[in-house]
Length: 395
Image (tube, one colour):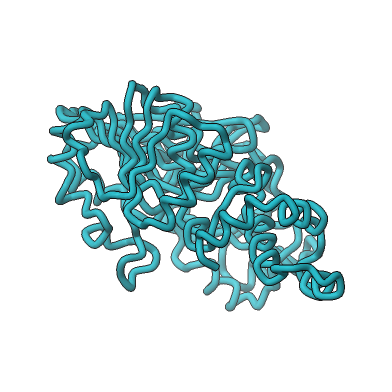
């Protein structure tokens, strides 16, 4: 469906009423009900309803206000939760969004800046974004269908770029040199125009690569939503000194964050009387802040990897706590005995700094997944150890 078709239909009161009537229908029943009711534009209505159903958690305002979106712009857009967070990191009078897309980031920038200049070189996408901003009543945004035209004359306080990561066969966006636009090629030029550049990168981007290849980097934010890493944000400035790393998890209306620019000495303990294990969240591990985080909380890692620590029963953000039921050597015979002793026939498997990956261990044990029990494998003093545990508290 073309963008102009979408915007035209979403201006039609009858079509909007049909969205309301059929919005709660089950997907497998929707097409049949629309056909029986003789609904006009039912194919297009089905497509839009399917997108809205998919977007209800990622883009709730877009769904609530019946805004226009396409499959491609939806997939490439930031979530509203991430967009709201990143908008709160930067301030100024004018911001230039060089890769506007659906306009989710630009929408939240309008709440922090007096003027937002949103560049979108795809004319159809630009029209969709313009339609959405008008429908939302946003007046301090200009959608420019040119590619960075007149950027130097605008002199924005901040430049934001979310480069297209699907311009090559690398669908996960690991090859940063092939992003469009090429951030490494343009960064010096952008910093000459604006004092601050914010870059959104794929969640699979290597943090060490950023450190080594973006010398202007001052801050790196690894952002997750409910413990699922969504994006990496880089703040670049003209005179960057040290780099501060930030692990951020957004959970409903709460944001948990840990930041550090230092690397403290590791504190480990191979034994403990504690009945609980703490595992740092994915965002902490991805940001490489395990040791700093554990040190800050006064926790002792069970080995040098820092991905598991002894903990008392307490609420700790950015991770989860396991209640240790039993433990023993990680050989197959010992584990089978442990499982039999506790009548466990299925469990999730976690391997942290272990000799093998989880899928290999599961295959060897022929153990079904699921249930509320966990087998946690690690190495203590060069020997494999297995903990049988259940999750005490997800935080």
